[in-house]
Image 1 (cartoon, rainbow over the protein chains, first blue to last red):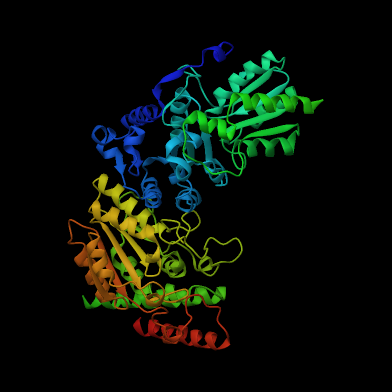
Image 2 (image 1 turned 90 degrees about the horizontal axis):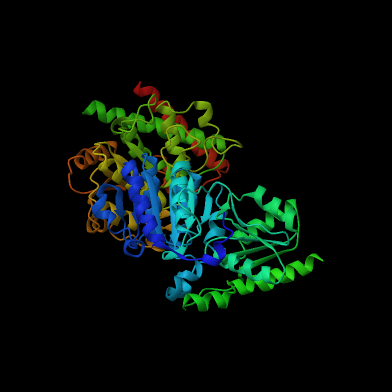
Length: 320
Length: 281
């Protein structure tokens, strides 16, 4: 499927925010119970036009995320299907108790979309750079947690969350993602993008592209790597993960997030309990965010193909 | 009118009686803030809330959210008297495995519309319900009780801005102004100043009534239903422990684990209410 992918990594034509607005508009046209909620970040997420296009299915609450979650609960209680967006830290950190009690504990439905994942917050800096949102949301019983890597995947996961109900958290970047999948692709299981025998690299979000680049570079060193796009952090595709760990005997995770709480933790927990192998987690460690350009920030926090290569190499050595 | 008034006041007696019996069975609980909302619950469930025990999910029903979830025991006594739960269940409050937890849970207790107890959240949910029903062109009402202490929470004021902006005239909010929060008098902890004026400035129609008078509360709700362009806030002038003089005078009456003296006084209150209920029959 993706054998030639790594040579041809290009950006999707649609920005992720445009994917969000387009998918919401389609869902809203098909179901008048769908409603989009914003807390004064419509312009940032390309949902501003929905105000005119679907006026009865769009609600901008102003800058009040806690109240937005409560209103979301009220909308769900009356049978509506709310899609809620803000920057990741405002969705999760700021309104966590509201999500926990009024939505999850009350067993109501919401699709929560946190944008500007991790370092892609760039010049909004440390206050806006969230490396802990997936960890927080993973602690919420029965909540589903996704980090999407590609436009086709994002549209699919939005529809999947709409279909399945419950509390869903979808983490995304706002701008163009790398093009990985063709229209019609489904995302019910983790995506094995390359198959190798020496190491498994499990990544999500913008680190999937880095993992694919790393796999190419590792090939030149005689190391063959499996790359898995683990877009669903919870529930985690345990079957695919363990099968791959058995095949390669070493696992490296890579995420634009704190290594504690997110993908790295989820993978470590499953392997630790089921099939321990040498493991390394690439991600942010005991650090806050900061301002900077994307390339600088990726380099600073080690979220790069070259860092993956370095640690993959060490892991393979550890196997011996 | 006299008949309705008498029956609402008699209904309040019953709610208070069963609230005391329920808490007595448990042996501890939020007496103060449960008793201060007995009269408003009597007026709501005795007259205004259109919700059928046999059709509890009808989309045209009136909604009730107890944002001050600590008043759960009084709500449960009311739901028992309205046929939503049995007397056995009523006395299972806070027992292991119960369907009646301290704070209301929509997934556990029939008749409970929304899970509350983390203060400040229920009012946002009520605003969301009222907004949703307004979008659908429904004429049903959403009633919500918030506590005076609860209004320390910023989320309440977010919800008030939202309700005022969207002119949710079928949202009727009661503020249980019993003047005490857990750690002491509200005016000493965070002075509430004038709730009526505050709510007016947030775009509400607002008034203050005697929260121990079912007649006054009923009249305020009737007036509220005439308002067509804004949400309504009815500030209830209440007393923590209302209707049980012994508790009204007790300084620390938020959460009580009765000692022998308390137990005796509470038993006397139960007997007095029982007598009044018999006399009224």
